[in-house]
Image (cartoon, rainbow, N blue to C red):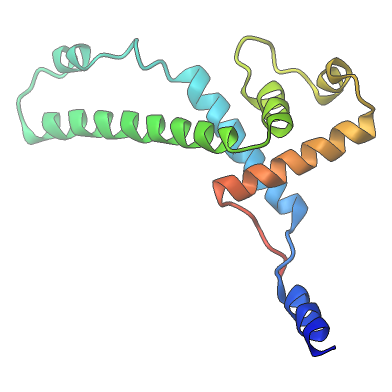
Length: 147
């Protein structure tokens, strides 16, 4: 009997996820991912063109190049981090996240279009979407807990 009570106490102490704040945190990251992957073209900006544009040889010039390289690296790391976390998800969750948030080829499709393409009810779609976002939050380590 003591073991059952102990397990119940442990369960009560486990923090509860704040679903709305967690979904918001994940969607912000996914929005940032969309922005960087669409607007940041790594191939079009070359260090050579930056060098030619800023042809003064000073510490200021050197720091601009370093800053450019650092920002490019940070963005690449961010994009890679998101992709790696999405790839940790179950197949169904991963497919939903990719269709809804990470597909670059199509216009930003609203939920109802994706729900229809998946051939599931509206309720089932939103339940799966919420679950996928929460699972991604755990993978990204951005879960928000209730206080």
